[in-house]
Image 1 (cartoon, rainbow, N blue to C red):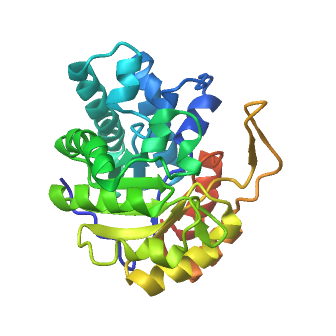
Image 2: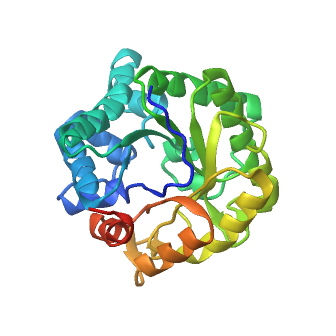
Length: 299
């Protein structure tokens, strides 16, 4: 596993992997979401990673966010094949990185560890409070994380975490793994999606050495500045931010509504405020990432 130690140099991560896959013509209205293509069209996932690398991202986040043993089992996929598919998510990003190696730029693969609610495919990751204990969440997350770690990514992306219970469970898991990880919450205003104060949420990661960056993802761009300030104050760790476009999801129509509020101009402010890793989540395209990258990439 490579060394992933964010510091003074700004790192640009990718945007919405599912957004790019949909732009490439794939229907992801499926409980497995982008993880379905690990089965049906893995070469398309690699192609999406290459597109973001080409746009200037130096981190590829794997298509494992919604990949779980439960989700694959519901599709009739047994445990042995599920292990192979979860590993494949890392291998595809690694293959894309290898294909870009000729330009001499250093790049990383972040293995996405989505929250328990993502596997339910019912929007629970934006509410949290699943009714499970921390110990039960540890037992659910650990087998999948073990598979991802075995595939040797550079860092684990513990992302879109909606509440402190799940964060505590993930801290237990990564402490057992002994590998670098980042922790990003999904927030609404100054609180987690479950309604807890951000200061309390970030404190969970403060004394966990495996956590090398903290921040937020899949929130509105307007929520980012306050999150940066709180994360820096509470943890002293490098801050990572990759919000969504700010558009609203219409659950009834199953479509996005409103205008994008994501911009390179905002990203400049996030960097000035102390963010060391910047990118995007849902509805953030390679073109958006390119607009950020061109500001910080030198010939």
